[in-house]
Image (cartoon, rainbow, N blue to C red; front, side, top):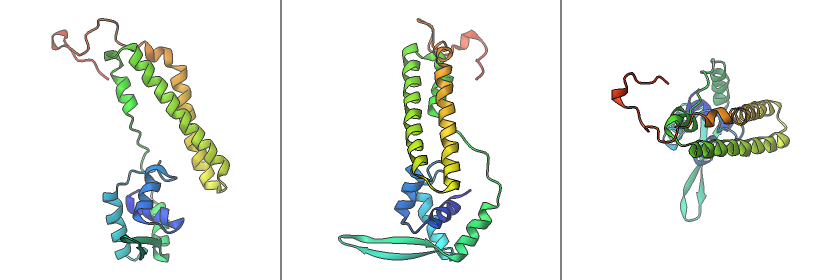
Length: 190
């Protein structure tokens, strides 16, 4: 999926400005799909408009520049349907927390404990947010997507709680060297 398809998908639910599309893709209901920056959204909207897949109207604002409001066209709906027929790419998961855990042997036990607690709490907040969203949601397809996200966060939180003792045991022993030393021979593998 690309940013053009994301924009068409968001506009399929109703008209929006580029700012609103960015907000929905950053921390709204479309935030778990693909990364989209202003630098990719606005060129995509310009191209979609040029290709007749979206229309754009300007609204005057008092003391501010006019805002551009985008709407999907019939041709855009057809393009969205065609794009949805393509096989999705494999999911990508990136985590600074897991990067930290790769180097747990260089960290004190307290640092690992704090990282685990912070992540468990963060997942708890996401679980609460998704549970609330699921209770308010009436669209079956959206309920499926929210339920999937809820299952992922619950599984991740449960794993961290269940594996806490093992994760804490990864900490550097007191007085251990903090970095790999070339004189020790072969580098450890990840």
